[in-house]
Length: 583
Image 1 (cartoon, helix red, strand yellow):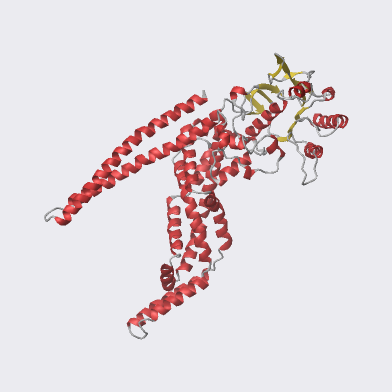
Image 2 (cartoon, helix red, strand yellow):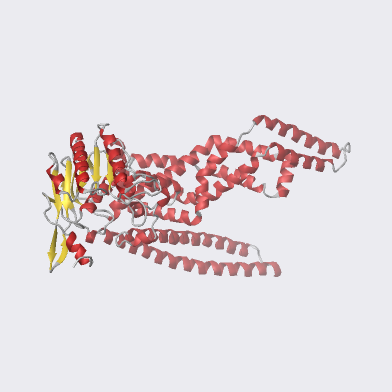
């Protein structure tokens, strides 16, 4: 259903492109004809007596007007092409082709266990599935929102409203995301990254004493006096030239700050060019969400006057690269000092507006990326509740046509048994990934989902660490140690542990797992522990569930559906025989 809607929208965009391309091409032909007519009339006006210049002037004005219309239709075609690109990105989420080109976010990966356990980063990770962010802040904020951070109920509801509005207003969201692609094409990574850092560089390196400006005033008076005295022949005619060179050297010595300032502002000016596309697109929208309006306000505060004054100032600073400009203007006015002073004045007045606007764009990208689930998946808006239950939950990263839905109601600590490959781990990851989406404010892949705001702990992909002398078993112990430490805070928590203590022998595993499960029961935690040890199912206070396999024509098959009770089947011997290890 949602795929059909996206394909229909894509077809509409293609029709817009086709229609406007025809108009653009016709205008281009007219523009060429007008240019030829203009040149012909201009030649006639120059060489034929009595020919009135008003005719070439009118043809030139017509050429300019037609060129403006050509640019207008060209922009419509280009912008709509970016929208088609975005729609192709959405459609790639239906067949997993996004994995080949998506931003995997590896550079943003932290040291949280759940990042690896729940496949947040890397090929086919949650970050890559969601992300349409192109700016550094957008990518960072999206990454931060996927780290299972505790959030207040009020803030979570506010985020849910903002994300839902962005998903509902799909055309507007696609338009902004299209400008993000245009932004990324205009700026290579080096330039993009420089914008956020350049402001800090400026703030750290500019230490200007305004008293120096008195030297400028005195110097300008001396220079003017030298000209007057030269005119009156009290000084040689060439004396003002000597003063200019003295002024140039004096400016270089007094205002060294201008050198670093010019370079940094050039970085900002170059990088900010791409941000303009996003700024203009977001400024033209009207939103109902409180959070979106707050971010839009930060963007709107960056008005045309502040941008124009920045560009003028940046242009003067860049002109210092021209030695003739620098010698003349420093020699006459000690211009470097004036430019540094003007920059500090601009910085005090407008710099925060620039920074806030860039940050706000990042938040827009974060929230638009989180809207991806609602745009491409069948799901629901999760509810904040003291209970933890869900109906027909699915893993967001598995194609819907091969994903089996499950329903579950947490009853404290739960033990899940079942044979290999039956779906235990995928079920837990479905819970973990959807819970992260819940905390981020996004939709979840479930018909109904209600949960409390809790700390999430996972222990799934535990591997040894040779560099730090940590075995698999000790790695599990470190994770369980963190969970036990959090239990002492008496704060609510969700715990997902896959095949507990698999790195040690059966006897020690059962003893350790029993002690751990009892701590979870006592704390009233929402917990799932998967295991092959049926002894754990006998622990008082746990609820038991299992996954089942069956055989069709002597071939193993799974329905990946959770059931109440304890598993009494095994398939390891069958799998060993299938692999040719056993006869």
